[in-house]
Structures are given as structure tokens and as C-alpha cells.
Image 1 (cartoon, rainbow, N blue to C red):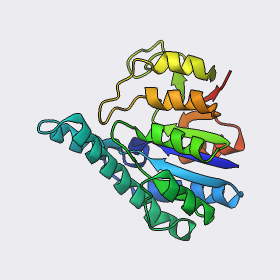
Image 2 (image 1 turned 90 degrees about the vertical axis):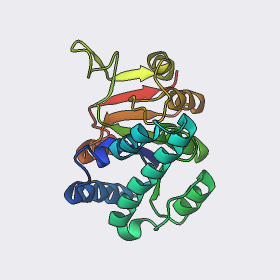
Image 3 (image 1 turned 180 degrees about the vertical axis):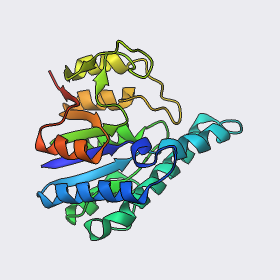
Length: 226
């Protein structure tokens, strides 16, 4: 199976900073999935690293420039993951999908970050999944699925275990696309998922749930085309 993971930067690089043990846990999980025989790519988000830099840069620069800073942060986070994956990948962050596909064709795990301003790493992951005709897109984030409203703001938010791509578009249509935004699935990614008819899972970004997504017993949200 070809599977692309959108790994939220905030789960790999939380507010308190990188943890050697946590990165080891993630890389061991991804190695295990690779050893099952899957072709795979991981698109890493910028997390708090990106948002901290962007919050300062926004005082001086426009959103497009802030996006460039965010892209650099995602690639730094990706290099951290690469450093721990060893021979399962190569020491190169691809800057476009052609480079990424070449790495995958070498039977290596692709690790990449952002590519273009105004594109979140979720959108990059969805685009890459479409580009290579992936069987599955897994969005691993700091929320355990898609809710009918933001569970961090509303106590009565209801988790949706299965939705269609059309329902996803309705839920994400008003989300922000500014540099450093962190909605569970952003509007552009939702549109690409709908266009490509990508089977998508949104799960809590723990090593356990990432593995469960592949084993078929996750507790997140399944998104299917109509």
C-alpha cells in the first residue's frame, strides 16, 4: 500500500521542544510500517517552531514571507526525523514531488516539509498523495479526529467517526489560510482530498494511533468520497 502521512509539527515538536525519546518512538513506528512492506512518505509540519518565528516576523514582513519562514521550519523538523530514521531514508529533504517520488522509487521513506507559500503541510501531503496515486492519506495531528466544531473551544463538540469529503468541505470552508494556521484539516487540503477522492484518516498524532491507522483499528475519523 502507498500511504502518505501528514505529521503535525506540534506533535513532533511540541511547545516544550524536541524530545529524543519521542522522536525515537515515532521513527520506530514508521520503520515498523515500512517493514510491513508499505511505500510511504511523511510530510512534517512546522509546529511551535514555525509559529514562534512567524509571530515575530509578522511584525516586519508580509504573509508570503512568513510562509517562507514556516517552510524552512517544516524542513528543519523533517531533518530531525531523517536523522533518526537512518538507512530507512536518505539525508535529503525533497523540495518538490518529482524529487520525493525518486526517493520513494529507491524504496526509501520520503520525509519532506512545505513546498509553496500559502500551502500548509496538510495540503502538501494531500497533493503528494494525489501525485503518486496513494492508497491512503493519514493526517496525524494534536486532535483525535474531526469534530463538528472546535473541541478546544466548545465542550459540546462531537467527534465524527466517518464523514464524506463533501461534509469535510462544509466543515473546513471558513478555516484560516494565514501563515502558521493550525486547523485540523485546512480548506486547500480538504479540496484536494475531495478532488482526488483520497481515502483519508484523521487521527491523534501518537505513535500508537499512527500504527493503528495502518492496522485498521484507529479511533479517529475516516473521510471517504461519495
